[in-house]
Every structure is written in C-alpha cells, then in structure tokens.
Length: 67
Image (cartoon, rainbow, N blue to C red; front, side, top):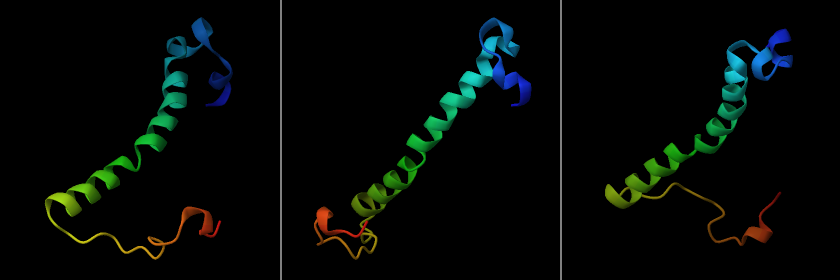
C-alpha cells in the first residue's frame, strides 16, 4: 500500500475505492473459500453416491475433541 494506504476519502486515489475493495475482499475470500469444497462434497455424496470422507472423530462428541 505504501503512503497511499494512509489516505482515505477524497484525498485517496479513486476516492479510496481500492482500499475498500482490498479490506472487504479479504473477508469475502475467507468466508467463501470453503463453500466450494462443501458443495463438492454434497454433490459427490448425495448426487453421485460417493462415500463420505473418512473421519476419525464422527462418533466423538465435540466437547471431547482435542483442542
């Protein structure tokens, strides 16, 4: 970002549009990052009839999982 990262509003290049997009974009990538994998698992299991991914902790209650 350099010195442009300190500017905001009308003082910034493009009225701070790119700073807003960089800030907001980091959250979009984190929130949406795993949804594609979840959807692929759902399609594979329910539509294609593929087996579930192996999981060692399916029968273990959440409170007993190691942290």
